[in-house]
Length: 158
Image 1 (cartoon, helix red, strand yellow):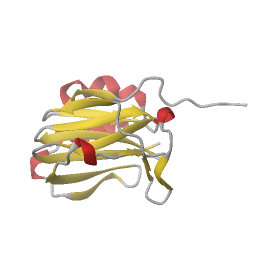
Image 2 (image 1 turned 135 degrees about the vertical axis):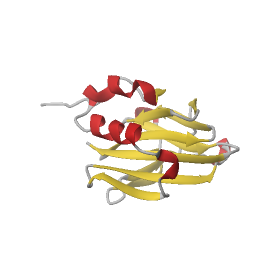
Image 3 (image 1 turned 180 degrees about the vertical axis):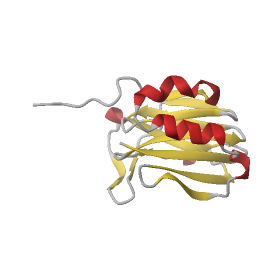
Image 4 (image 1 turned 135 degrees about the horizontal axis):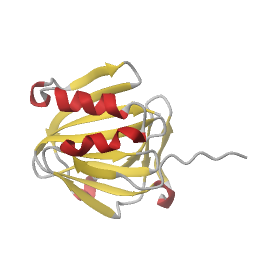
């Protein structure tokens, strides 16, 4: 029996200036990060932008943050998220998917999205120019802020 383990460490949190050190983690990371480093992020329209078809694409959002009590832990099976904060301050809840005691919303394969009913055990803060990488093993609750959160999420197909 063969088991594939994608990620032995939890989510990654860093500054965009350090992105090159993460290129070896996935065949598409270099292209994804080069897009982030070479694009005028503040001028991108909200919505979806293709980088390499369905293999790498991003969604830009600019919206009011939510309170911690409203945060939902989400997960994805087919994509890795690279979430980059453009403007504002954002907190993101995190915990291991293996600690999810029960689902709030079953996994929807068409949208590559599911929700865990647990509350986040850990919180990280993103400042402008910082990114977080969430692998399928990472439950994450984004968009917690008192500010308007302007961010970009790159979806990298596994």
